[in-house]
Image (cartoon, rainbow, N blue to C red; front, side, top):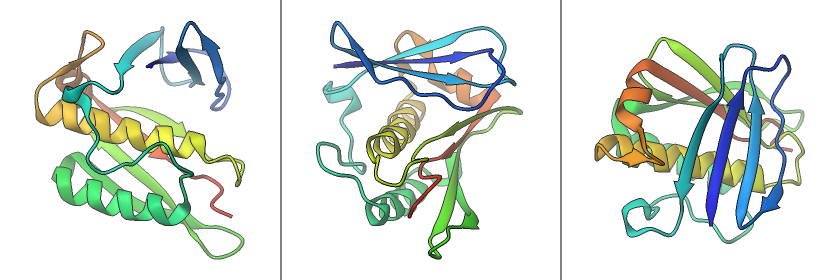
Length: 163
C-alpha cells in the first residue's frame, strides 16, 4: 500500500481525509505556513523502510505511543525530540515530537478524537520512516529526505486528545 501525503497552502487547521483511491490512502493536511503543494509518496512493506519501533496492524494506544516516542528519541538522537506541551482533562500528557533541523516549520496533529487511533499510528509511523530515511540518506518517493529535514522541522502532535 502507498501513502500519499499532501500539504496544501490553504487557510485552516489540520484536515485528514481517509479515502482509498486505487490502493492509496490519502491524507490531506492544510497549513497556512506552507506555500504550494508538497507531496511525499511512501511505500510501506519495502525492506528498505521496514519499521523497527512503531508497530502497525493493531489498535494503537496511548501507552504504545509514549513508549515509541521515547524509543524514537533514543534511537535517532537529536533528529527526533519530544516535549509534553499540556495535559488532558484526565491528566495524560500531550506530546509534541519534532523531526528535523530547519527553520521552516510544519505542524501535523492527529488523534483529535480519543477513540480514533489510526491517525496517531500513521503520524508515529511517518516519524520513524522519515528519521530512518534521513539517517540512511535515502530518498522517499523521489524526495531527498536529508535536504527536506535539514531545511524544515516537522512538529507532530500525534495524539492531541489522549483521553
